[in-house]
Amino acid sequence: MQRVMIASWLVEVFMAKLNALDDTLVTRAELSGSLDPAQTREQLDAVRAEYQSFVARYKSDLDRKTVYDVISSHGREGELLFFANAVNDYDYVLSYWVQRERWSEALQVLKRQTDPDVFYRYSSVLMTHAATELVEVWMRQANLQPRRLIPALLDYDRNYEGPLAQNQAVRYLQYVVNQLGSTDAAIHNTLVSMYASHPSRDESALLGYLESQGDEPRFDPDFALRLCIQHRRVLSCVHIYTSMGQYVQAVDLALSHDQVELASVVADRPLTNPALRKRLWLAVARKVIAQSDGIRAAIDFLRRCDLLKIEDLIPFFPDFVVIDDFKEEICAALEDYSRSIDRLKREMDESTQTAAHIGADIAALDRRYAIVEPGEKCYACGLPLLSRQFFVFPCQHAFHSDCLAKKVLELAGASKSRRIRECQVQISKGLVGGAKRDAMIAELDSLIASAW
Image (cartoon, rainbow, N blue to C red):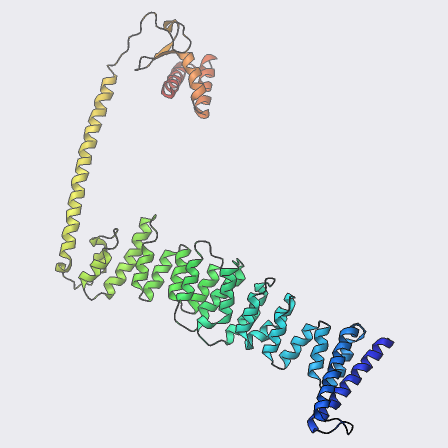
């Protein structure tokens, strides 16, 4: 305690001495009747150096609050900042410069900091008054969390009125996204909001960002869509709708703003869904025909789609249009129909001939037979074929009925195998009789023969 009191008292002595020497220089009076101004200045420098040496050596014996109060009461700015820097109280130094709106001095102190909390604490005010320099400082700090700088960026962007290319908040977010590869949705959503809310009607920056995100965007599509609709970013809205697979909404929005070319590009996107693609092109056709001054120009434009035919477009033309305006298209459509009819006729004739051949083959089956030699053997067990019931196939392969059933059970599916076993059990144990037994035997023969 005694050391603290003595050290604080010595600070008071130093401040009084420095003030006295400053006063002497200002009034250009001699200090003791023998010192001239040059000697006074030398003595002032000596006392200041002695104070700095004292602080550097005995800073552990100095109470911060007491020293701040003492030096402040004497109005010694340089000595106050020297003490704050000596005790590593950079927060006090930053606060001091910020309160006096000395932004360059505050940034010089900030450049030497490594504690992220210091950056978060002073970023809002510094971003407002020294955005370009502050962003440079941010970019050199690898330990910052960009998400925690978003409030400062939004405050700056809210009051920014210059071109988008010079927006320092956008510049920093682009650096975080492109150079640092951030995947934080909050960062991407903030960048989208700044692009969308800028007063300029140019959407190239926003569209470039949206296209760069590909099929797996880091931003929230619903959030981005609401922003784009709110700020009437038509091209961006169409892009987001398309990326979400909502082609109908994308085409309708583009057509509502007379963006026919854009709607045409979107209408060609669903290549795997011809029905949807045709529906989209019909919407484009209605708009093109309504806007077109000449029928020929409308038809030439709509020829870009291979799904539309003249009969699809006729309902969209005005009632007073004469047929001569698209006579060639009607003739071409009739020729296509004629060729289609001829092709269908040929297919019908071929089908009739095929049916006749099949009927003849079925009729010939009734007269088909196979000759079994007395010594022929079963292809499965090798025993004489005529010893018990057997099957003979058109390929001349012959099997005992029970041998063929075993083979079928090995190769057939689970359901068919189960049904074959059920039939065999019921027939062998006499569980069915009469006509029902004959029907089951026929079913068993059919299952075995057809499966093989």
